[in-house]
Structure formats: C-alpha cells, structure tokens
Image 1 (tube, one colour):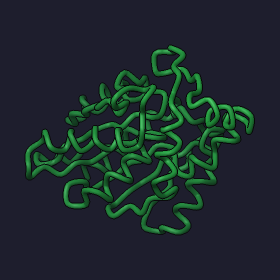
Image 2 (cartoon, helix red, strand yellow; image 1 turned 90 degrees about the vertical axis):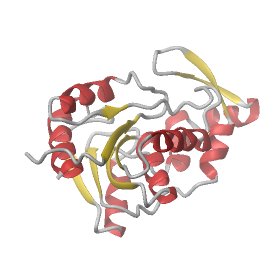
Image 3 (tube, one colour; image 1 turned 90 degrees about the horizontal axis):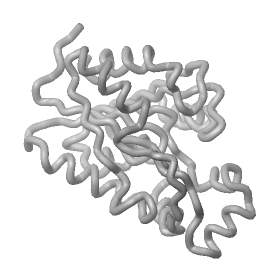
Image 4 (cartoon, rainbow, N blue to C red; image 1 turned 180 degrees about the horizontal axis):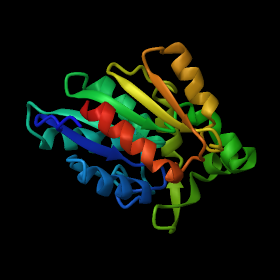
Length: 218
C-alpha cells in the first residue's frame, strides 16, 4: 500500500440531518486510521442544524482549509449532502482540493424534496418557514426554509474540477442511483462504483475503505 502523502489532509463531510458523530463517518475514521489516514470530521451544521444553509456548510469547509498548512492539499469523502458540499467546495478551492470520494452524493436535492416530504409537506415548510426534522442525535428540530432557499442558489449538479469517484447504493431511496448514473454519463472522467446497499452504505464500508485508500492515497 502507498504511504499517505505527507502534504495531503483528509476530511469526511457528513450528510444532512447528521453531524461529526455520524456512524459511517466514525467507522471510516477508525478504519482509515489503521491505514495511516487521519480523517477529520468537521461539523457542517453552521450556525446550527435548525439554521443550516449551503453557505454555512461551505464556510465550515473554508475554515477547515484555512486552519491547515498553506501548502496542504485536501481530499474529501463526502456523504449525501456532504458530497454535494464537497463538490461545491472543490469549485471554490481548485488549488486546495484535489480529490473527492463521494458517497451517494446529494445532487439534484431540490427536485427530490417533493418526493421525500410529499408535496403537502414541502408546501407547509415554505408556508410556515420551518419543518420538523430529526437531527443526527434523533432530536426533532425545526429546520428553517432558508436551507431550501440556499440550495436553490447553487447548481443541482456541480462541475467537479478534480479527480473524483462516486460510490452509490442500488437500493438508495433517498438519492436514487440514477442521479449518479446521469452525472457520470455527462462526466466520463468521474468513476461510479455501484454497490448493493441503501443510502446509509453501512453494509459497504469495506469497498469504501478500499476506494479511500486506493484513490485518495494512491
């Protein structure tokens, strides 16, 4: 196995309604530590889950990059919403982010909300200004409509300026695998690894670990 690049830094960007203590992120952190990778898990819920916006999540990534050595290159594992944020961050910092491993990336999320919440639920969220959603700890939280508004200010399918791979579960009902298939069809330089799993990918930690080691380090 290749040794980790001493100038590279690695981070896991968690999904929506999640956080740094995410089960998948923590499992990968333990696994990759045994392979010589120090995986940082920043909190994207800025300033809080209730007030989360894409801009707030990107600010958390900006802060992470700014805290690291100026010469360091960053390599992200991004899960769901975190995968979407990773792609946007790579656009903002092409000189600092040089590889992405995206897990069921949350592309096209705006168009998915009616299916995930129902048309009535989405209308109520917009009308009332908040919608109750469980956070990463299972606490029901009134999330502001500003989150959806922030999603609308950014592209559904970000252009990724660096080498990238996607791992996606064929049984994913949150972000259907067709989303990633469409993306790689238009971006043939991005590889898609399909696995027999759902959106959590908890049954696919072995292939994710191997992709992380072979692609992010290799």
